[in-house]
Image (cartoon, rainbow, N blue to C red; front, side):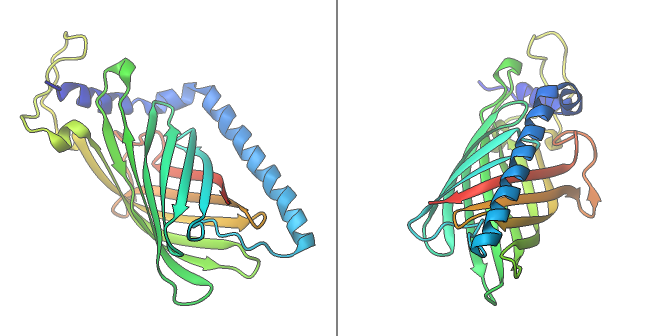
Length: 259
């Protein structure tokens, strides 16, 4: 039988992310390298774009029947890739695969334009659903994360886009979602130290976000994307414990390419 004690153990290990980030210099080096490449790529293509005219690439969606690949780095993940397919002019569905400093995750992402009052303004939804198999070396259980967002997206005269919106983040242990039983704490994975009774907030958490972002077409096929999303508890930043205890913020820097 799958024990809830290892799920609690995962959440306790997740609270150590602050120490992990402070000591993982490789993560910082990779992040700085990716950021430098993004900036260099952006400057190069912006300069060429000024010579050939404005680029009209849409960072959000591929055209119907077309594909889009996206590459990201940021906080809390080190690397994230996505392949999306245009189901219609306003809807795409993609698959995600990426790594945080602790483990890998994969899942699906739905993106859709639900309203477009004018040629320069639209309202879109983005909703990733990610499954994390669990930290094998720490005997952690699988868990899932969903982050649906609603955004207002404005296209500027130079072809760039800015947006802002709200969202909800839900994270939960699979054991909590699909198995019944008491929330007993049990022992540590080594079977020595008794655990206190398990609290529901250790198994399932919901937070809200206020995100804002910017995209700039680099060519007719490529766009640069940047987004910042503070993770909130109501109108205040999330407390520094449990999920995302290193920094209560999600930062995304990346490139999208349509083909």
